[in-house]
Amino acid sequence: MLGNGNGNTTRKADRIDHNWSQQERSAQYALAQQAMEHDWKTNPRWRGVQRPYTAADVLRLRGSIHIEHTLARMGAERLWELLNNDPYVHALGAMTGNQAVQQVQAGLKAIYVSGWQVAADANNAGTMYPDQSLYPADSVPNLCRRINNALQRADQVHHADGKVAPGETWFAPLVADAEAGFGGTLNAFELMKGMIEAGAACVHFEDQLSSAKKCGHLGGKVLVPTTEAIQKLVAARLAADVMGVPTLVMARTDADSANLLTSDVDPRDREFCTGERTPEGFFRIQGGIHSAIARGLAYAPYADLIWCETSHPSLEEARQFADAIHAQYPGKMLAYNCSPSFNWRKNLDERTIARFQDELGKMGYKFQFVTLAGFHALNLSMFELARGYKVAGMTAYSRLQEKEFSRETQYGYEAVKHQRFVGTGYFDQVQQVISGGVASTIALADSTEAAQFSERKPLTKPECGPDAACQPILGECPHSPVKIDIGPKEMLLPSGD
Image (cartoon, rainbow, N blue to C red; front, side, top):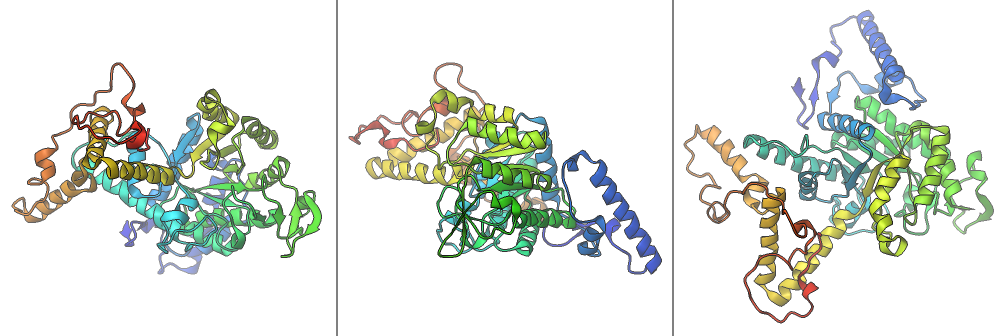
């Protein structure tokens, strides 16, 4: 294989030898075309997937060499395996590489990369935006790349130390948000390519007008015609085929709560038009579950998963959507956004919340995710620490550190030793290899971390009493008996448990 400088490789077997005759080239293309068509027809991976283009189209657009996108391929294959073998795959939205590492360390098998979170605090413009596609279009691919880089560093650190990755691999598949494609079908095609280059395993596209795109839980959403939404799904699939990666395509519809449509050109949309027009020229439509079902049925042949964005958590509505899709497309996988935009305790009792995801899984919602988990965990945990620090000073931070130590011994949490966590020991090993083992400037050996943070004890989960994972971060940890009048006890309880 040959490196291309982007972490990907080219395969010699996939290059067309420029010394071949035209006849030899034609024969090779014919064989490649037959192999691709055979794969589409016989591979269970493509069961139920329609492509309104040919293998010849893909080969013509692919170019003369094939670049192997290892992380994207590995992630797509892993995610497909999980979706087909586990009752469901649940994920949290990560907005930094470190959050993704913690999710994998804690045992989650997939990571969600949210456009909302990118807009809020992880975009290339370095600006805080609402979820209205205001950030640069390559921001989500860049966050995917950043997350994969962090997972790669964790893998390198553990591998160099002879440790086994949590679960089966550090490289959890990334499910990434392409929003409405940031333009037309060509924009969707290029954005999908960018996602694959960054190592995404699955990418979802929604059916809103990209220039007026809103978070699914905001008002003012404008749908594009069903035909246009399908073309973006086709563009995404074509991009994946051109790049030779089995990336999953997820179709999202916002028809449940949208009330505007750009055009009534598609007969499938006219059933929901009210006959009214807006000052901007949009068509008013009747949103709701029936409109969402119609869209989901139209998208099903072109997508691996279908996501209906809803305005509240409802098992009944979820079952209605699932039953309608499966009546025509048995076994079609579904996705569900367990959104922080829902007031969960206001909508559901504790018992229903506890069984919510299991019930969704039984209905065929194979991918379930909390989109903005990273945003809320980051903000609340820092707010609570800062609030406690203002009142109690170092007592507050010391308690957080003690909670880190308890997590280290009980569950394998590693970031408390922050120098080793980010790779200091790994680069010490690199330096020793380069110097032949005689380097005098290695960093970790004489560090305060080596002197003051003892090696991790064997994992010992509590045998009785409340699970430490359910106790407040700063309220219940061992700490010095400093008496400070700080008001309510919850003053020192950051989020996280």
